[in-house]
Length: 489
Picture 1 (tube, helix red, strand yellow):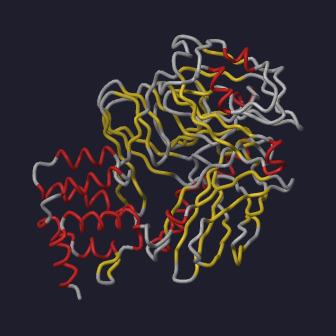
Picture 2 (cartoon, helix red, strand yellow):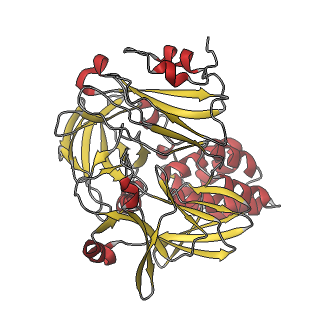
Picture 3 (cartoon, helix red, strand yellow):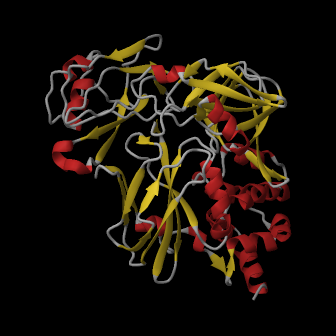
């Protein structure tokens, strides 16, 4: 049974390996769902060089004083089996991240956990296309928000409307090189249509580690009509750089490019199509909070329309070195080409590995291995997630794909659907439409306008969401969908 010990880290320092989750919970007093902290344990003794990560979600209560910073001084705690990687949740900001492992002993110099009173409400933007450029728009009342597309955060004291789009870094690549800087995040062209922001938090992918000097190497780049200017950062956290009372232009985080192999945070994205006898997939290694994801989505757009689905997989266990190579492994694959993937800079479209395996209905096991033979990433994609039987992208009616069906009968669906809200509820429960889109649907007073808003939210999102929408339509408007399906044969 957990006991409350406000200075649990003093007890923790006395323990030697193996320190399991139950013991840690006992000495820490973690027992209620007040603050959520992701705690990663790496046990070298159990897994050898594979370095598998055992993840534990710890629920913390009555531990942090809201007005203070808790410093966990564990420099002398010799633990040959673990290091901390703390994933930023809504209620915690982590000041020093990514403690590095040195030899067989993981030394934690100092972790500083800061109580973050700001609750970032995640919202999806409204999207539109202007001259081939995807525009994102948010309208928010007083509060603190995070865009689910870009990771951009903002705090406002009154109603605001902001819009932004991703800018191409290529015109400024040589300028950055001359300045001895490199990209640290996406280049966002932000415009305020209404109101002003108290704060904006620009996303970045730089791993700060335990080196405070890295913060001094980061600057804010403003791209203006007649040139560029640099601004000092106000505060740096794990994934964001804070600016007070911002004035907008095209804006981004940049950092000193003194080394080609700096530590960065990454994401792994898989595009997959399940055929009759084979599974074809392409794996991308992306810089987190960069414009690379948009570049990949643009590259894969045509393939998505042909049945490929996007899967955002778990992130690597820690930071990776920029420009490094990693071998992609899958024990059940019949072909992987190329066999290695490189983590490329932000101004480069990411490379990918294509994998082919038999459609044998098994979980897909994948890992990335560095040049030192250490596994830096491992993930399993369940057959229940990607199989045709469960994945909505395969849904067709009378041989018509979901996208074609919804577009072909859009006008009829707007006039004929009488149960829009149950369909919206289904999609919202699966996080396929955001809170802002859901609110726009509920705000309408007629079924026709609700259905119009629903289709406006669904149609730009690709086969997976459109397949789920068609499935919900079939359940809640069975007779209408059946009639349209039969009339198309």
